Length: 372
Image 1 (cartoon, one colour):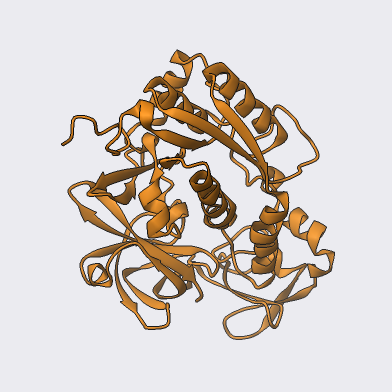
Image 2 (cartoon, one colour; image 1 turned 90 degrees about the vertical axis):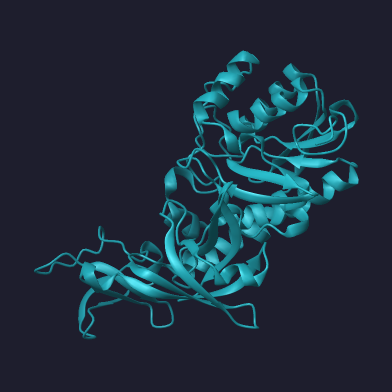
């Protein structure tokens, strides 16, 4: 290994290396900026203003709120680094919020954080970083990246409770070779410890828990705001096709849901299917939730197709386990995934993400969007 290879795998001295750090105002990205500065890199911090929440409050548990921008500014000032704010509200509305609303209206369960990474965060921020002639774009995501021979591969983070690789499956090969994730090899308490040692104002700041435009996790209120006509009453049916209840709008339901169905039966009922065309909810017993076959669209691969013929594992939700599976690709950017064992609550609109195991850990291979 070249003695001048720096900590992010580039053959340059840190003092000759410019990095853009995506600074959300949280402890993770702030700590990354601090680490890069301490190691002697030339650091440019960029914060994205994505959403006008209307209540710029200090206690917000949302990311990218007004308070977060102020926190990022303070961190940049403390570290004495260049800091810029990019105003991307219109791009975010078109690329993320509109997609989120339309997806729910189709009976899907969308993941706006993937859309956000795929559009404004990595696409637009990537382009801005290149324009600034930065050598790398560095983020506070908990994923492990290993760069060998100028090629970067992504792995699940050491802290599996924090791992965010699922949300990054749509990263392109070009983006991945340019991105760096310094936190993937450490636990969260270590991140906070570093932030305290750097005397950063966000060292004890709580993690953002809500999607930035969904206050308190209330999806229905967001959809009502943008599409007030979407709350149409419809039938709740059982597997025999009998009408056993009425719902107030399919957007109130997700696959696998038990609470809030408001239909009594001799056994617990779960949402098995959402039919947006007929505005119907199909419910049934828990044992009918398990599925082994998943159809995917818009496949993104970070590996050779041949790698998918080996032992593959998939995740069908961000908090899910790795499941043994076989993946069959077609020539139209679609795929059929066959799980070895059935899994409950698989929902259209979510992602199915592919992994394999090697001596570095659980390697991200790509993934696609669940259609059915």
